[in-house]
Amino acid sequence: MQERLKKILEESREQLKKAASLQDAEETRIKVLGKKGELTEILRSMGKLSPDERKELGQAANQVRAEVEKMLSDTVNNLKEKAKEAKFKAEAIDVTEPGKTYKLGTKHPITITIEEIAKVFKSMGFSLAEGPEVETVFYNFDALNADPYHPARDWTDTFYINDEILLRTQTSPVQVRTLLSQKPPIRVFAPGRCFRCDTPDATHSPMFHQVEGLVVDEGITMADLKGVLDSFAKQMFGSDTRTKFRPHHFPFTEPSAEMDVSCFKCGGKGCRVCKGSGWIEILGCGMVHPSVLRVGGVDTEKYTGFAFGMGVERIAMLKYGIDDIRLLYENDMRFIEQFK
Ligand code: DAH
Image (cartoon, rainbow, N blue to C red; front, top):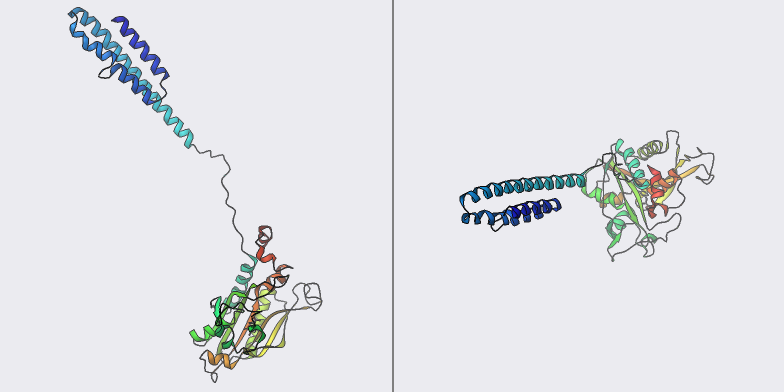
């Protein structure tokens, strides 16, 4: 019996030494101390012994049990400790590691240019107006006094969805929408995308941006138009900038003009940017045609107005020295990141 007890103790020690998991330790416990465990059986069988034997063996058996129990709890504690350490190790944060860096995007040059234009007009009391990119023939052409046979209406210039709906070819329809939804005094600017059936090349893109402007109030004259647009040019291109207005024709303005600014690159001496002329054409403008005002429900006896429209790509390209409009839409990050 003593031998068996010794063996149980030795075996338990060996097994627990090898125990790699709580499950292993539990198996040893069941094997030795469980209901049908080796030691339990010895203790149970002691009834058959004489009192002296029982006393002696009982002491020895209890000692073994105490030792096995102690080993068990040590093993369990040890394993738990190890598991905890492993967990901490796995979850450890190496504070010396370089942090994850998120690359910030940059604003597109077109966005930057629209924001600059918007800032100038906001400072002059203009507010933002908007209209849909999918427009009706009525707002894009008819209401703007466009001749029924105007070449711009042609299938080759305009993306038609059907006979009445198209992709707007200009931001000017926002003028009419604004006249119909607001009462004078009106002072709005309307940036947005426009579409024309153009084959892409260095200066043409089937999608491009314009900023439209509209002012309607009592007593508005060409002098107001010139003052506002001259001030815009000076804020946008530098205070030395001079402006010049050349007669032109647009169906929705009368009289109409194009505004040139003195070349902001050479100051007017003549260079590559201004193609040697010293002047750069920047926008179309004019006094709103009475028939446009009438479509917009404005009393033409009381009110007059002026309007203007500029191409954002053209201004961005001139300002940043971009020589091909297609660069603006290729989204090559090496290009776009230059405009921070
Ligand atoms: N909508 C014209 C275009 O696409 C630009 C324009 C010219 C707008 C004169 C205007 C204006 O408001 O008065 O070419």
